[in-house]
Length: 415
Ligand SMILES: Cc1cc2nc3c(=O)[nH]c(=O)nc-3n(C[C@H](O)[C@H](O)[C@H](O)COP(=O)(O)OP(=O)(O)OC[C@H]3O[C@@H](n4cnc5c(N)ncnc54)[C@H](O)[C@@H]3O)c2cc1C
Image (cartoon, rainbow, N blue to C red):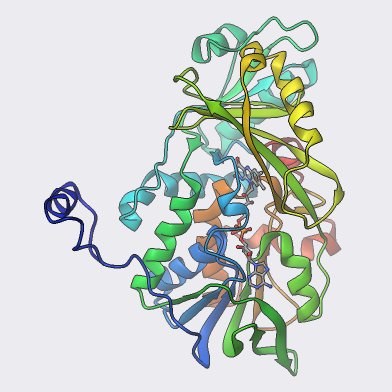
Protein backbone atom coordinates (compact mmCIF):
# COMPACT_ATOMS: atom_id res chain seq x y z
CA UNK A 1 0.00 0.00 0.00
CA UNK A 2 1.42 3.36 -0.99
CA UNK A 3 1.73 5.47 2.13
CA UNK A 4 0.14 8.89 2.16
CA UNK A 5 2.58 11.59 3.24
CA UNK A 6 3.28 15.26 2.72
CA UNK A 7 6.05 14.34 0.27
CA UNK A 8 3.74 12.03 -1.71
CA UNK A 9 1.10 14.75 -1.93
CA UNK A 10 3.68 17.32 -3.09
CA UNK A 11 5.07 14.90 -5.69
CA UNK A 12 1.61 14.07 -7.02
CA UNK A 13 0.66 17.75 -7.12
CA UNK A 14 3.57 18.28 -9.52
CA UNK A 15 2.59 15.44 -11.84
CA UNK A 16 -1.14 15.98 -12.09
CA UNK A 17 -2.07 13.35 -9.47
CA UNK A 18 -1.54 10.56 -11.98
CA UNK A 19 0.59 8.42 -9.67
CA UNK A 20 -1.99 7.44 -7.05
CA UNK A 21 -2.94 3.77 -6.94
CA UNK A 22 -6.57 2.75 -6.54
CA UNK A 23 -7.53 2.80 -2.86
CA UNK A 24 -9.02 -0.70 -3.05
CA UNK A 25 -9.85 -3.53 -5.42
CA UNK A 26 -13.38 -4.37 -6.56
CA UNK A 27 -13.29 -8.15 -6.94
CA UNK A 28 -15.95 -10.69 -7.89
CA UNK A 29 -16.65 -13.22 -5.13
CA UNK A 30 -14.58 -16.41 -5.07
CA UNK A 31 -16.13 -19.82 -4.37
CA UNK A 32 -14.71 -20.21 -0.86
CA UNK A 33 -13.22 -18.12 1.96
CA UNK A 34 -11.95 -19.00 5.42
CA UNK A 35 -14.11 -16.22 6.83
CA UNK A 36 -17.04 -14.29 5.40
CA UNK A 37 -18.24 -11.15 7.13
CA UNK A 38 -21.74 -9.93 6.25
CA UNK A 39 -21.88 -6.12 6.36
CA UNK A 40 -19.22 -3.62 5.29
CA UNK A 41 -19.97 -1.02 7.94
CA UNK A 42 -17.28 0.06 10.38
CA UNK A 43 -17.74 -2.95 12.67
CA UNK A 44 -17.58 -5.52 9.85
CA UNK A 45 -14.54 -3.89 8.28
CA UNK A 46 -12.75 -3.49 11.60
CA UNK A 47 -13.44 -7.16 12.38
CA UNK A 48 -11.86 -8.16 9.09
CA UNK A 49 -8.91 -5.82 9.64
CA UNK A 50 -8.04 -7.21 13.10
CA UNK A 51 -8.58 -10.79 11.87
CA UNK A 52 -5.80 -10.08 9.41
CA UNK A 53 -3.61 -7.96 11.60
CA UNK A 54 -3.90 -9.68 14.98
CA UNK A 55 -4.58 -13.26 13.90
CA UNK A 56 -3.06 -13.62 10.41
CA UNK A 57 -6.41 -14.69 8.89
CA UNK A 58 -6.51 -13.01 5.48
CA UNK A 59 -8.58 -15.27 3.24
CA UNK A 60 -11.58 -13.12 4.11
CA UNK A 61 -14.52 -11.64 2.18
CA UNK A 62 -16.68 -8.78 3.42
CA UNK A 63 -20.01 -8.76 1.58
CA UNK A 64 -22.14 -5.64 1.55
CA UNK A 65 -25.63 -5.27 0.12
CA UNK A 66 -25.20 -1.57 -0.61
CA UNK A 67 -22.01 0.42 -0.62
CA UNK A 68 -19.08 0.61 1.74
CA UNK A 69 -20.04 2.44 4.94
CA UNK A 70 -23.48 3.28 3.52
CA UNK A 71 -25.32 2.09 6.64
CA UNK A 72 -25.15 3.70 10.05
CA UNK A 73 -21.40 4.15 9.78
CA UNK A 74 -21.93 6.84 7.16
CA UNK A 75 -24.99 8.32 8.84
CA UNK A 76 -24.00 8.97 12.42
CA UNK A 77 -23.09 12.13 14.28
CA UNK A 78 -19.56 10.80 14.96
CA UNK A 79 -19.39 11.27 18.74
CA UNK A 80 -16.62 9.28 20.41
CA UNK A 81 -16.49 8.82 24.19
CA UNK A 82 -16.06 6.06 26.75
CA UNK A 83 -17.78 7.46 29.86
CA UNK A 84 -20.07 4.48 30.43
CA UNK A 85 -21.11 3.21 33.83
CA UNK A 86 -20.58 -0.54 33.88
CA UNK A 87 -17.09 -2.08 33.86
CA UNK A 88 -17.44 -4.22 30.71
CA UNK A 89 -18.75 -1.21 28.78
CA UNK A 90 -16.03 1.13 30.01
CA UNK A 91 -13.41 -1.47 29.05
CA UNK A 92 -14.52 -1.94 25.45
CA UNK A 93 -15.40 1.71 24.78
CA UNK A 94 -12.12 2.92 26.30
CA UNK A 95 -10.16 0.36 24.29
CA UNK A 96 -11.93 1.72 21.25
CA UNK A 97 -11.32 5.36 22.11
CA UNK A 98 -7.66 4.68 22.71
CA UNK A 99 -7.37 2.90 19.34
CA UNK A 100 -8.95 5.99 17.72
CA UNK A 101 -6.08 8.09 19.09
CA UNK A 102 -3.64 6.48 16.64
CA UNK A 103 -6.00 5.12 14.00
CA UNK A 104 -4.89 7.53 11.28
CA UNK A 105 -1.27 6.40 11.64
CA UNK A 106 -2.29 2.75 11.99
CA UNK A 107 -4.36 2.75 8.80
CA UNK A 108 -2.28 5.38 6.99
CA UNK A 109 -5.57 7.15 6.35
CA UNK A 110 -6.62 10.40 7.94
CA UNK A 111 -9.74 9.59 9.96
CA UNK A 112 -9.68 13.14 11.36
CA UNK A 113 -9.95 12.04 14.99
CA UNK A 114 -10.57 15.24 16.92
CA UNK A 115 -10.37 14.75 20.71
CA UNK A 116 -12.01 18.09 21.39
CA UNK A 117 -13.81 17.00 24.54
CA UNK A 118 -17.36 15.76 25.14
CA UNK A 119 -19.68 17.05 27.85
CA UNK A 120 -22.97 15.53 28.92
CA UNK A 121 -25.04 18.25 30.55
CA UNK A 122 -26.73 17.70 33.89
CA UNK A 123 -30.01 19.65 33.76
CA UNK A 124 -31.89 17.93 36.59
CA UNK A 125 -30.87 16.91 40.11
CA UNK A 126 -31.27 13.32 39.00
CA UNK A 127 -28.68 13.83 36.26
CA UNK A 128 -26.31 15.59 38.67
CA UNK A 129 -26.30 12.53 40.91
CA UNK A 130 -26.15 10.14 37.95
CA UNK A 131 -23.16 11.84 36.31
CA UNK A 132 -21.30 12.23 39.59
CA UNK A 133 -21.76 8.51 40.07
CA UNK A 134 -20.45 7.84 36.54
CA UNK A 135 -17.42 10.08 37.16
CA UNK A 136 -16.60 8.04 40.29
CA UNK A 137 -17.06 4.77 38.37
CA UNK A 138 -14.86 6.06 35.55
CA UNK A 139 -12.13 6.97 38.04
CA UNK A 140 -12.11 3.37 39.25
CA UNK A 141 -12.10 2.09 35.66
CA UNK A 142 -9.18 4.27 34.60
CA UNK A 143 -11.31 6.36 32.22
CA UNK A 144 -10.40 10.05 32.44
CA UNK A 145 -13.61 12.00 33.10
CA UNK A 146 -14.63 14.66 35.61
CA UNK A 147 -17.82 16.18 36.93
CA UNK A 148 -17.66 19.95 36.27
CA UNK A 149 -19.81 22.84 37.47
CA UNK A 150 -21.91 25.24 35.36
CA UNK A 151 -19.27 28.00 35.19
CA UNK A 152 -16.76 25.58 33.72
CA UNK A 153 -19.42 24.46 31.23
CA UNK A 154 -19.90 28.07 30.14
CA UNK A 155 -16.15 28.60 29.88
CA UNK A 156 -15.75 25.53 27.65
CA UNK A 157 -18.80 26.31 25.54
CA UNK A 158 -19.69 30.02 25.58
CA UNK A 159 -22.77 29.64 23.34
CA UNK A 160 -24.59 27.65 26.05
CA UNK A 161 -27.28 29.50 28.00
CA UNK A 162 -26.78 28.04 31.47
CA UNK A 163 -29.73 29.78 33.19
CA UNK A 164 -32.53 28.32 31.09
CA UNK A 165 -35.97 28.68 32.71
CA UNK A 166 -36.99 25.02 32.65
CA UNK A 167 -33.69 23.20 32.60
CA UNK A 168 -30.77 25.33 33.83
CA UNK A 169 -27.35 23.76 33.37
CA UNK A 170 -26.32 22.41 36.78
CA UNK A 171 -23.04 20.83 35.68
CA UNK A 172 -21.72 18.23 33.26
CA UNK A 173 -19.83 14.99 32.92
CA UNK A 174 -16.74 16.04 30.98
CA UNK A 175 -14.45 13.73 29.03
CA UNK A 176 -11.58 15.82 27.68
CA UNK A 177 -10.25 13.13 25.29
CA UNK A 178 -13.66 12.32 23.81
CA UNK A 179 -14.48 13.91 20.49
CA UNK A 180 -15.33 13.12 16.89
CA UNK A 181 -13.83 11.50 13.78
CA UNK A 182 -14.76 11.55 10.11
CA UNK A 183 -17.18 8.63 9.80
CA UNK A 184 -16.69 7.82 6.10
CA UNK A 185 -12.93 7.94 6.52
CA UNK A 186 -13.10 5.31 9.26
CA UNK A 187 -14.87 2.93 6.87
CA UNK A 188 -12.63 3.84 3.93
CA UNK A 189 -9.45 3.56 5.98
CA UNK A 190 -10.29 0.09 7.29
CA UNK A 191 -11.49 -0.98 3.82
CA UNK A 192 -8.27 0.15 2.16
CA UNK A 193 -6.19 -1.67 4.75
CA UNK A 194 -8.28 -4.86 4.36
CA UNK A 195 -8.01 -4.71 0.59
CA UNK A 196 -4.26 -4.25 0.92
CA UNK A 197 -4.07 -7.45 2.99
CA UNK A 198 -5.69 -9.30 0.06
CA UNK A 199 -9.22 -9.43 1.47
CA UNK A 200 -12.19 -9.10 -0.91
CA UNK A 201 -14.72 -6.35 -0.24
CA UNK A 202 -17.72 -7.17 -2.38
CA UNK A 203 -20.29 -4.40 -2.67
CA UNK A 204 -23.82 -4.63 -4.10
CA UNK A 205 -23.88 -8.20 -2.79
CA UNK A 206 -26.79 -8.92 -0.49
CA UNK A 207 -26.85 -12.01 1.69
CA UNK A 208 -30.15 -13.78 0.95
CA UNK A 209 -29.68 -17.06 2.82
CA UNK A 210 -27.35 -18.70 5.33
CA UNK A 211 -26.59 -22.23 4.18
CA UNK A 212 -25.98 -24.81 6.87
CA UNK A 213 -25.59 -28.48 7.59
CA UNK A 214 -25.60 -30.34 10.93
CA UNK A 215 -25.65 -27.22 13.06
CA UNK A 216 -22.86 -25.45 11.18
CA UNK A 217 -22.77 -22.79 8.51
CA UNK A 218 -21.45 -24.02 5.16
CA UNK A 219 -21.77 -20.74 3.32
CA UNK A 220 -24.12 -17.99 2.21
CA UNK A 221 -26.30 -17.31 -0.80
CA UNK A 222 -26.02 -13.81 -2.17
CA UNK A 223 -27.27 -11.76 -5.08
CA UNK A 224 -23.88 -12.51 -6.67
CA UNK A 225 -24.09 -16.27 -6.15
CA UNK A 226 -23.22 -18.78 -3.45
CA UNK A 227 -20.09 -18.39 -1.34
CA UNK A 228 -18.77 -21.18 0.88
CA UNK A 229 -16.97 -20.32 4.13
CA UNK A 230 -15.50 -21.95 7.23
CA UNK A 231 -16.74 -19.18 9.52
CA UNK A 232 -19.42 -16.53 9.18
CA UNK A 233 -19.58 -13.19 11.01
CA UNK A 234 -22.92 -11.35 10.96
CA UNK A 235 -22.28 -7.62 11.41
CA UNK A 236 -25.27 -5.88 9.84
CA UNK A 237 -26.56 -3.54 12.60
CA UNK A 238 -30.24 -2.72 11.93
CA UNK A 239 -30.65 -5.80 9.75
CA UNK A 240 -29.30 -8.24 12.34
CA UNK A 241 -32.75 -9.67 13.03
CA UNK A 242 -33.14 -10.47 9.32
CA UNK A 243 -29.80 -12.26 9.08
CA UNK A 244 -30.47 -14.14 12.32
CA UNK A 245 -33.81 -15.26 10.89
CA UNK A 246 -31.98 -16.58 7.80
CA UNK A 247 -29.59 -18.43 10.10
CA UNK A 248 -32.48 -19.87 12.13
CA UNK A 249 -32.24 -18.12 15.50
CA UNK A 250 -33.89 -15.10 17.13
CA UNK A 251 -32.26 -12.02 18.59
CA UNK A 252 -33.44 -9.75 21.44
CA UNK A 253 -33.01 -6.74 19.15
CA UNK A 254 -35.42 -4.16 17.76
CA UNK A 255 -34.77 -1.99 14.70
CA UNK A 256 -35.63 1.71 14.78
CA UNK A 257 -34.77 4.75 12.69
CA UNK A 258 -32.53 7.22 14.54
CA UNK A 259 -32.62 10.81 13.32
CA UNK A 260 -30.01 13.51 12.73
CA UNK A 261 -29.77 16.85 10.95
CA UNK A 262 -27.27 19.61 10.12
CA UNK A 263 -27.62 23.36 9.92
CA UNK A 264 -26.23 25.70 7.33
CA UNK A 265 -22.48 26.30 7.84
CA UNK A 266 -21.50 29.12 10.16
CA UNK A 267 -18.23 30.47 11.56
CA UNK A 268 -16.53 28.40 14.28
CA UNK A 269 -18.47 28.92 17.50
CA UNK A 270 -18.22 25.66 19.42
CA UNK A 271 -15.11 23.51 19.78
CA UNK A 272 -16.50 20.82 22.08
CA UNK A 273 -19.26 18.23 21.73
CA UNK A 274 -22.32 18.84 23.92
CA UNK A 275 -25.01 16.34 24.76
CA UNK A 276 -28.17 17.50 26.50
CA UNK A 277 -29.97 14.33 27.37
CA UNK A 278 -32.84 15.79 29.38
CA UNK A 279 -34.07 18.04 26.58
CA UNK A 280 -32.78 15.37 24.21
CA UNK A 281 -30.44 16.73 21.64
CA UNK A 282 -26.72 16.82 21.07
CA UNK A 283 -24.54 18.97 18.94
CA UNK A 284 -21.05 19.52 17.57
CA UNK A 285 -19.68 21.73 14.82
CA UNK A 286 -18.21 20.08 11.75
CA UNK A 287 -15.05 21.27 10.01
CA UNK A 288 -17.28 22.74 7.30
CA UNK A 289 -19.05 24.83 9.94
CA UNK A 290 -22.38 23.02 10.01
CA UNK A 291 -23.91 22.37 13.41
CA UNK A 292 -24.35 18.58 13.49
CA UNK A 293 -27.43 17.78 15.56
CA UNK A 294 -28.62 14.42 16.77
CA UNK A 295 -32.24 13.69 17.58
CA UNK A 296 -34.15 10.71 18.87
CA UNK A 297 -35.47 7.51 17.41
CA UNK A 298 -38.81 7.20 15.63
CA UNK A 299 -41.52 6.06 18.01
CA UNK A 300 -42.11 2.79 16.17
CA UNK A 301 -39.98 -0.01 14.76
CA UNK A 302 -39.11 0.43 11.10
CA UNK A 303 -36.49 -0.05 8.38
CA UNK A 304 -37.12 3.18 6.46
CA UNK A 305 -33.61 4.71 6.76
CA UNK A 306 -35.14 8.14 6.11
CA UNK A 307 -35.49 11.42 7.95
CA UNK A 308 -38.81 11.86 9.80
CA UNK A 309 -40.04 15.40 9.30
CA UNK A 310 -41.45 16.07 12.78
CA UNK A 311 -38.04 15.39 14.34
CA UNK A 312 -36.61 18.65 12.97
CA UNK A 313 -39.07 20.72 14.97
CA UNK A 314 -38.96 18.56 18.09
CA UNK A 315 -35.18 18.39 18.29
CA UNK A 316 -34.48 22.02 17.47
CA UNK A 317 -37.22 23.21 19.83
CA UNK A 318 -35.66 21.15 22.63
CA UNK A 319 -32.18 22.49 22.00
CA UNK A 320 -33.10 26.17 21.61
CA UNK A 321 -33.57 26.68 25.33
CA UNK A 322 -29.96 25.64 25.95
CA UNK A 323 -28.58 27.06 22.68
CA UNK A 324 -30.69 30.16 21.85
CA UNK A 325 -28.47 30.96 18.84
CA UNK A 326 -29.99 27.95 17.07
CA UNK A 327 -33.22 29.89 16.55
CA UNK A 328 -31.45 31.95 13.87
CA UNK A 329 -30.11 28.98 11.92
CA UNK A 330 -31.55 27.35 8.83
CA UNK A 331 -31.49 23.58 8.83
CA UNK A 332 -29.87 22.12 5.74
CA UNK A 333 -30.32 18.35 5.67
CA UNK A 334 -31.92 15.57 7.69
CA UNK A 335 -31.51 11.81 7.55
CA UNK A 336 -32.00 8.60 9.50
CA UNK A 337 -30.29 5.25 10.00
CA UNK A 338 -31.63 1.93 11.26
CA UNK A 339 -30.22 1.20 14.69
CA UNK A 340 -30.30 -2.15 16.45
CA UNK A 341 -31.51 -1.72 20.03
CA UNK A 342 -31.14 -4.28 22.82
CA UNK A 343 -33.15 -4.12 26.03
CA UNK A 344 -30.15 -3.25 28.22
CA UNK A 345 -28.69 -0.88 25.59
CA UNK A 346 -25.47 -2.88 25.44
CA UNK A 347 -24.07 -4.67 22.41
CA UNK A 348 -23.92 -8.35 21.51
CA UNK A 349 -20.55 -9.88 20.51
CA UNK A 350 -21.31 -13.52 20.65
CA UNK A 351 -21.21 -17.09 19.40
CA UNK A 352 -24.59 -18.23 18.06
CA UNK A 353 -26.46 -21.53 18.12
CA UNK A 354 -24.60 -22.37 14.88
CA UNK A 355 -21.11 -23.51 15.84
CA UNK A 356 -19.10 -21.48 13.34
CA UNK A 357 -21.36 -18.42 13.10
CA UNK A 358 -20.75 -15.32 15.22
CA UNK A 359 -22.72 -12.14 15.65
CA UNK A 360 -21.83 -8.55 16.44
CA UNK A 361 -24.79 -6.19 16.81
CA UNK A 362 -26.91 -4.25 19.28
CA UNK A 363 -24.72 -1.13 19.23
CA UNK A 364 -27.92 0.84 18.84
CA UNK A 365 -27.54 4.58 18.93
CA UNK A 366 -23.88 4.56 19.96
CA UNK A 367 -21.68 2.19 18.01
CA UNK A 368 -19.55 4.52 15.92
CA UNK A 369 -17.29 5.21 18.88
CA UNK A 370 -16.91 1.46 19.38
CA UNK A 371 -15.78 0.48 15.88
CA UNK A 372 -12.07 -0.22 16.59
CA UNK A 373 -12.66 -1.93 19.95
CA UNK A 374 -15.59 -3.95 18.67
CA UNK A 375 -13.64 -5.10 15.61
CA UNK A 376 -10.75 -6.08 17.87
CA UNK A 377 -13.02 -8.12 20.18
CA UNK A 378 -15.04 -9.72 17.36
CA UNK A 379 -11.89 -10.75 15.50
CA UNK A 380 -10.60 -12.33 18.69
CA UNK A 381 -13.88 -14.22 19.12
CA UNK A 382 -13.96 -15.42 15.52
CA UNK A 383 -10.32 -16.46 15.46
CA UNK A 384 -10.38 -18.39 18.74
CA UNK A 385 -14.01 -19.49 18.83
CA UNK A 386 -14.51 -18.21 22.39
CA UNK A 387 -14.84 -14.61 23.58
CA UNK A 388 -11.79 -12.85 25.00
CA UNK A 389 -11.90 -10.46 27.98
CA UNK A 390 -13.37 -7.54 26.01
CA UNK A 391 -16.33 -9.54 24.69
CA UNK A 392 -16.94 -12.02 27.52
CA UNK A 393 -19.80 -10.08 29.14
CA UNK A 394 -21.57 -9.31 25.85
CA UNK A 395 -22.72 -12.81 24.92
CA UNK A 396 -26.28 -13.65 23.86
CA UNK A 397 -26.57 -15.91 26.89
CA UNK A 398 -26.81 -12.86 29.18
CA UNK A 399 -30.41 -12.34 28.10
CA UNK A 400 -31.30 -15.87 29.16
CA UNK A 401 -29.34 -15.66 32.42
CA UNK A 402 -30.52 -12.13 33.28
CA UNK A 403 -26.96 -10.73 33.44
CA UNK A 404 -27.90 -7.45 31.82
CA UNK A 405 -25.35 -4.67 31.36
CA UNK A 406 -27.67 -1.76 31.92
CA UNK A 407 -26.43 1.30 30.03
CA UNK A 408 -29.80 2.91 29.42
CA UNK A 409 -28.61 6.18 30.97
CA UNK A 410 -25.30 6.28 29.13
CA UNK A 411 -26.57 4.97 25.81
CA UNK A 412 -30.37 4.95 25.70
CA UNK A 413 -30.89 8.24 23.99
CA UNK A 414 -27.45 9.73 23.77
CA UNK A 415 -24.43 8.69 21.80
C1 LIG B 1 -28.44 9.28 13.04
C2 LIG B 1 -27.45 8.45 13.79
C3 LIG B 1 -26.59 9.06 14.67
C4 LIG B 1 -25.64 8.31 15.39
N1 LIG B 1 -24.74 8.96 16.16
C5 LIG B 1 -23.75 8.26 16.77
C6 LIG B 1 -22.74 8.95 17.46
O1 LIG B 1 -22.70 10.18 17.52
N2 LIG B 1 -21.76 8.21 18.07
C7 LIG B 1 -21.77 6.84 18.04
O2 LIG B 1 -20.90 6.23 18.65
N3 LIG B 1 -22.72 6.17 17.33
C8 LIG B 1 -23.69 6.84 16.69
N4 LIG B 1 -24.65 6.17 15.96
C9 LIG B 1 -24.65 4.70 15.93
C10 LIG B 1 -23.61 4.17 14.94
O3 LIG B 1 -23.73 4.82 13.71
C11 LIG B 1 -23.80 2.67 14.75
O4 LIG B 1 -23.90 2.01 15.98
C12 LIG B 1 -22.62 2.07 13.98
O5 LIG B 1 -22.31 2.83 12.85
C13 LIG B 1 -22.95 0.67 13.56
O6 LIG B 1 -21.96 0.25 12.67
P1 LIG B 1 -22.11 -1.14 11.95
O7 LIG B 1 -20.88 -1.36 11.17
O8 LIG B 1 -22.51 -2.16 12.95
O9 LIG B 1 -23.40 -0.93 11.05
P2 LIG B 1 -23.62 -0.29 9.62
O10 LIG B 1 -22.66 0.82 9.36
O11 LIG B 1 -25.07 0.00 9.51
O12 LIG B 1 -23.18 -1.47 8.68
C14 LIG B 1 -23.97 -2.62 8.48
C15 LIG B 1 -23.95 -2.93 7.00
O13 LIG B 1 -24.61 -4.16 6.77
C16 LIG B 1 -25.19 -4.09 5.50
N5 LIG B 1 -26.20 -5.13 5.35
C17 LIG B 1 -27.44 -5.18 5.90
N6 LIG B 1 -28.09 -6.28 5.50
C18 LIG B 1 -27.24 -6.95 4.68
C19 LIG B 1 -27.34 -8.14 3.93
N7 LIG B 1 -28.47 -8.90 3.94
N8 LIG B 1 -26.28 -8.53 3.17
C20 LIG B 1 -25.13 -7.78 3.14
N9 LIG B 1 -24.99 -6.63 3.82
C21 LIG B 1 -26.04 -6.21 4.59
C22 LIG B 1 -25.76 -2.69 5.46
O14 LIG B 1 -25.99 -2.25 4.13
C23 LIG B 1 -24.69 -1.88 6.17
O15 LIG B 1 -23.77 -1.25 5.29
C24 LIG B 1 -25.61 6.90 15.24
C25 LIG B 1 -26.49 6.27 14.35
C26 LIG B 1 -27.39 7.04 13.62
C27 LIG B 1 -28.31 6.35 12.65
